[in-house]
Image (tube, rainbow, N blue to C red; front, side):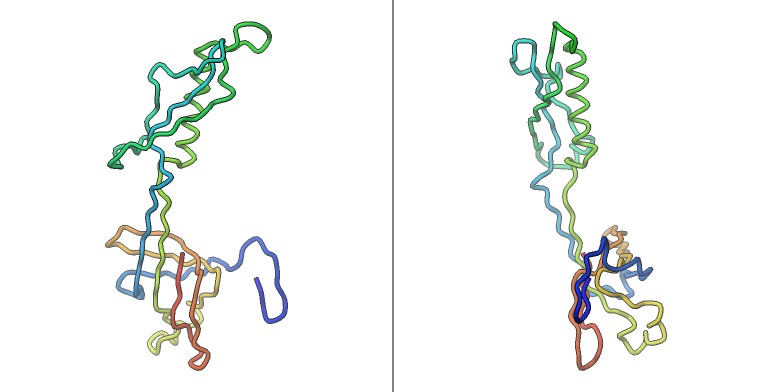
Length: 182
């Protein structure tokens, strides 16, 4: 955060403003970008057998619950270092235990969201206090850089909380001419 002379390192700039942006109220533009380049829908976990050779699951791979949502299967192999078959000594591990560790590692990847796309939503809207009709709401609707704004667009099925990331300010008119949320 910064003011005219000082720069502050803080955990979070802004606050939850309670302001809502809705379709038909004050949205002037909404862009949704979906990036599926890092999505993985099928994981092949690989461990090691007692001879040091690759150990695969009996079913070979595990599929994401979201696999049907994509046109193509996106596959990745993961090495599970803790899934090593050991037949002698204190750290004995059977193939069945190795399989369980391999399945656990694959499901941990799915739980972390590797099977979901990265979605970025950019919203352009009119700040109501900057309009003649919205002057009486000025106290309730002020938004500053970093503030959280709740966005609702029923037509696209969007209901998210976003932060103000960019703005254009008219110094002569003393008002925002453009605000972006992302």
